[in-house]
Image (cartoon, rainbow, N blue to C red; front, side, top):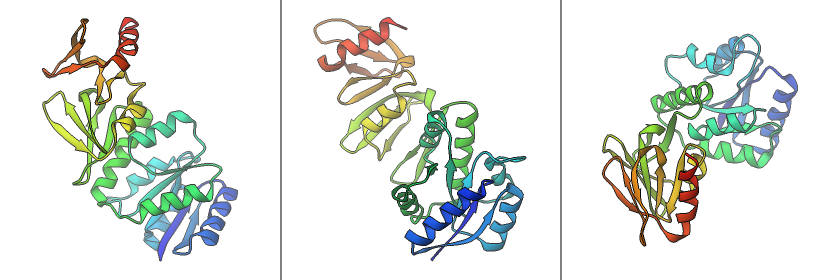
Length: 246
């Protein structure tokens, strides 16, 4: 049985979420409910929960300030928020679980399913730090799952990404390469508004790292790390259109 704590200043929201958990999640027990960071800190110390459902915006102190009360984060957090698309992207970039109000049971069950796979406390603490940075200074860092755990990468360091079936090789400006258990399509979805451009079924490039490109029968792009990448016919026009607007 997992122990859960709900921290949200809206009492109605707390009641609705508690009822959903009680009715649909047989292996989760709501041990306590709080309506502020101060109250939430107390009930976390009291109940030692496995998962905390945490609202971000609350009077006096916001949800991020909860983490300042603990030397180590020994519980998983699922944020509950009514935020817009900007904040949702910050969650996704930081690999953080969230529930968007109003909460639907399918979303709740999926979030709890992920929580059941416990992660290292120090890694979790870093993920919340990345989220806080991305909320205040949008999308500077990316949390990426690997076979060993999680890599935290500055987006500006990514030179290009190369597809490898269900994995992606991420090449950085310091000549490091990371193998990430995420498809290239997922990277494109996250990074297409960050000056990244698909040039091939296998390549997604950071336009800030393009040194030059050659227009001929088989156009090529030269990247800052020395890589030479082909532009496919499928993506050629989109690439040239994008470059002409820079």
